[in-house]
Every structure is written in structure tokens, then in C-alpha cells.
Length: 446
Image (cartoon, rainbow, N blue to C red; front, side):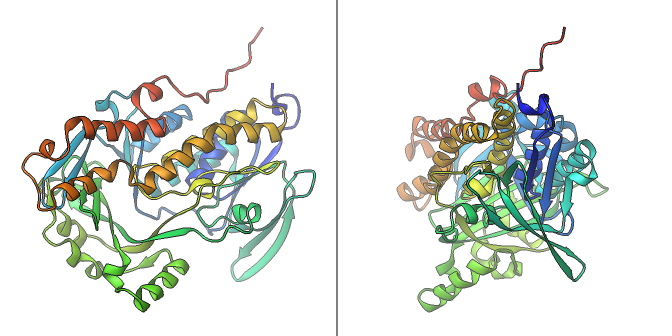
């Protein structure tokens, strides 16, 4: 029986009010923790960002938290994923979610909608005071007793103030440039950039102009990911479409000094608005399954440019009563729909481990023992392109295109690549359908 069932619940502070932090707060509440505070640097939780996919293993955990209906109200079930070569040749098509035999769907959703659902649930279940905006962790000390000492900075208008706090447990959910992670690993340095640029945005399109599937297309130099993420609405029967494009920076900025300047710029500004015309020429003529990539790009309200970065896998997340979740722990390349997915699984695993151990230090160690090997394997797999490697293989073997993909990549090889990646992250149907390993049994009554 955990300590929060015997006496006063330990105070858990979560640094970061994104998907990882809010999911962790809800998971802890469901596990019986009553004193949970999320501090978020932004002045308010607003529906910003682009789209993402939630794999069935994450949807399973959100369903266990009672959030599936609210989430699906603004999301779309992903029923099929297709891979295309840039010539237009279909490499593979795979059923997803329920169609692939899972008990839970795969969901395409706007990040803002997911974050609003999570934030609303935190306020409703834990109370309005549990989510504090305009406050960030500016420093962290780890004394010998293992209890973290936080320095907090808060802002009200143009006025800044400072405070200190000593919670029982600290969870760093503050993203890829985490202050908590930097305090735990001060010699680490910044994230690693692989030289690729990513352009992301959302377009509103007539439903008939968008296929009822998600696709990833390209060659060994550039790729496009496109998928609808809402049901048709309004008189024009429009849907929201997420798109993400990737291309080497040297193709855009040139080599030598220009590329060096680009690298310096992108290390400092990771959310840079750019005109669509800056990259649209690279994707002229790209059409797959009747869906025009240039047509979708021209319908975008805005676009943002990012460096494709990740973090080196850590050999340790947990120091005493402090640990990491989500991108703060294991930021990975945006491949395989695993960023938000693994953050949500982290949240449930952490709450489960803390609830099952009377000592928070032991609980955090058990959480890390469970999660770090899996996410480390995914980080490394994504550096090798994960399941998207089929596009590079097709291009290497048939750069001008093909009429029959199985003459280029045998069906058995395609299936093996997909299965191997699913097994790496433990999100194959058989594993997911066994149910959540993070359910906490209710105490016996009577």
C-alpha cells in the first residue's frame, strides 16, 4: 500500500504543462495522489501547434483515464497508412487501429485539442489551483537527502518574481530543452541536429480533396507526411489536414558558410514562421492517391520551420526524488508517431510505479527501469528512419520508380520492417490488446 493511502499524499510538482506533464498529473490523480501541481511557463494553455498521431497503446491509456470520448470529439480515427515513392508508386498500405486488430483506435488529432482536453480534465479533477501558468522552473538543486529544491520564476504582466519550493517529488516534463534535465546533466549540451529542416502546418480543405488515409511519401532526400485529423464540418464539408515536410538544410540554404549560419540560426529559433512559398517549389507535382501536396500547402494559413533534432539517450533519468518524462527524457525524431504516444505511456507508468512503492525513490527507479530501455530503443530506431526506411529502400533500388513494389522490396521484407518497429516499442496488437500494464488494483473492501 502506498504512502498516500496511509497519510498525507506526497506533493508532486510537474515542470511543464504540455502533453507529458498534463498526462502525468491526470495519471497521478487516478492513482490516488491528491497533491499534484503543474507549473507551466506559458501565460495560458492555448490550442497551438499542428497535428499528431496517437498510437493505440497511448489511446488505451487515455481511455483508462476516461478521456477517450472527449478526445474523439475533435479527432479522427486513422484507418490506413500508405507509403509512396516520390514517383507516385505505392510502396505499401497498412490498416491502422481497429482495422489492424487493435482494441483501441489510432487517432489523428490537433495538438491543441489534445492539450485542451488534458488541461480541462486537470482543472476539473484536481482543481483550478493544480495548473499554474506563467511560472517556470529556473533552477534546481539536489541536496544529499534527494529532495529537490526548486527556484521558480513567475511573471505577472511586465513584473517578474521569484520563489522557492521543496516538493516531495519533481517530474521534469519541460520538453526537449528541459531545465530539469540540464540540472541533472549539466555537462550534456544541447539537442542534436541532423541537418534536416522540417516545415509544419495545418490546412483546411474540402473533404473530397483529401484521402481517407495518412500517407508518407518521398525519396532519400525529402519527404512529406499528410493526414486529415477531423471529420467534415460546416456547409463546405471541410476537414483539418496536418502536413509535415522534411528536406536537408543544405538544399535550402546552400553549403559552407550559409549552412553554418543556418545551423546557428536554428539552434536558437525552433518555431520560425516562414512563407509557404519558401519551400513549396520543392514539392511541385507531388500527388499521391489523388491528394495534391501543393494544393494542401497553398491552403495553409501559416507555416513554421524547425530543425529536426533529438536528444542523445541518457543512461540515467532519475536522481533521488526527481525524474523526467516525455521529450525531457527521450526526445526523438518525428518518425513512427511516437513522440506524444510515448509521453502518455510514460505518465501512466510513472503513476503506477509511485503508487506501488512506499518510498518515492524506489518508485521513480522502478518507473525508469520499465520505460528507459523501450524509449532508448525507439530513439535509436528513429535515427535509422524506423518504418519510413521503406521509402529509402525503394528509392535506392528503383530511383526512377516501379510498377510492382514487390519486385523491388519483397512483401516479406516490408512486413518484417513494420513488425520489427512495432515490437521495438511494444505496440504490436498482441501486446497492446492484453490491456494496460499500469492499472492499479483497487483495495479490497470488507
